[in-house]
Picture 1 (cartoon, helix red, strand yellow):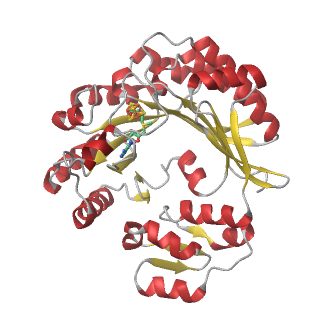
Picture 2 (spheres, helix red, strand yellow; picture 1 turned 180 degrees about the horizontal axis):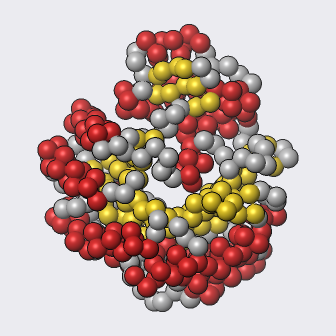
Length: 382
Ligand SMILES: C[S@@+](CC[C@H](N)C(=O)[O-])C[C@H]1O[C@@H](n2cnc3c(N)ncnc32)[C@H](O)[C@@H]1O
Ligand code: SF4
């Protein structure tokens, strides 16, 4: 790690208006009002702690994720950004993203976020079909999502949105039509996620009982390959398994995770990777918002776990993240993390199977390889 490497700040806002039945993010619904001033004080205090753990860095990206950060008051966002700039140098061209849910989009608040310094918006559209939005438990219609997108485009120079595909009962040709429409509304970045059945969610119970059937196996592959084909043709190729951008418009914050750089994560359930004198640390913050507030009040931060990663763990993590990227991994960087060499015979085998491709200094997963990424990583990490 050098001081000039990218460094990110992640801020987790743990509340939503309603819990979507597929979602396992650390998000909670509170029926009373949330005292944001208490939260502001806690975020600032936890940021101070990370300022002390990772001094002297230049912040290249900041990401407000959730939960639904578009429920934050613009003053809350502003206070966090101001403190970040007091603790570190924020690069003049830093990417500052906020995630929004179309149901909590309000033009006035968007202008407030912009004024506070946010310059990129990521909107959770999920689908352009009203029936699908309903079965995903979303509270907005596709019309409302498109209105929110228009408001976002008026306020921010960079706007991305999320869609979920391979949904219950979805036909491939219907996805072709929906994604084609979505691409006509896209600016230069889209996140396209295949519906994942997350353990412990209401969708997992429905799936287990047979009441919810989603495309899998070859059918899921067909969805993935069609997604690549349409996005490539529209000039938004994938730069990561689920993320598509016009070349040059990739999310810098996302790239930072997958390229294995350091970041400080504050707020309930946030994770960090911070390189210190003795190596890289994986730090996790406690998840319950109320327990987090108490912990911060008592000790200035809500750190629940701080584990020093061995070079081997760090290298495995870099492989796991880096092979999700179209650019793949930098073999020199991998070797700098962990002296071990990638097993040449195994690489040759995987290359012969069409799962990886080697170019000088880099190793990539092919489209076929990305479809079996978990297996690939197990083989490479072994
Ligand atoms: C934190 S949410 C985005 C912002 C906001 N909370 C919203 O939902 O509008 C992150 C994204 O992850 C995706 N996501 C969440 N759970 C998923 C699942 N089980 N399968 C696929 N995508 C999922 C959704 O596309 C969602 O927009
Ligand atoms: S998908 Fe977004 S809005 Fe829905 S529960 Fe998860 S974080 Fe909240």
